[in-house]
Length: 225
Image (cartoon, rainbow, N blue to C red; front, side, top):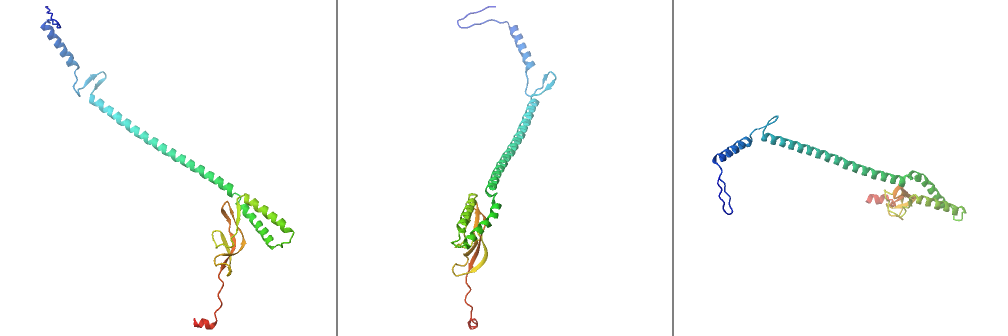
């Protein structure tokens, strides 16, 4: 073997048969391990193809996506049911609170209705009593105390005299022919009306004015007409 040295280079003489043997070794190794696309590869336990492996992975991916969509739909259904249940609970709380307030405000309505005739009788007694009657002062005091007690419970009385008849607040007991009050207006009042926390619990008992009848026509006037 001879070597020739030059500045910046290196050269060695290699026998031809050694080069050929190395090339043949490379070809054998390459041929043993080369794989073409789609070629079956022998492995321990059986043979598989790259195409089949890709198809299996795609099937698993599709199954995972389907399961994910199903789980998402179940979660959405559970969330919707939870939202509806929360809304129903909130509405129930509001209704319960309103009912409690109604009971507190109007629970005494029946008792108040039973007591109103007593107040009416006190008013009638005062209207019929003489001014010099020594009992008038005592009756007035009782009446005032009674009405103040009702007022503390939210009861208020109102008068309909001098007002136009309102069927929502007045109850007509009779018609009163009169020229002093316009027709359709309250001419007299038998009993005041009352409200409980602005709710009408008894309308005012009134007489409604109607026009006076005209003078009767004579037979001659009737025949002329």
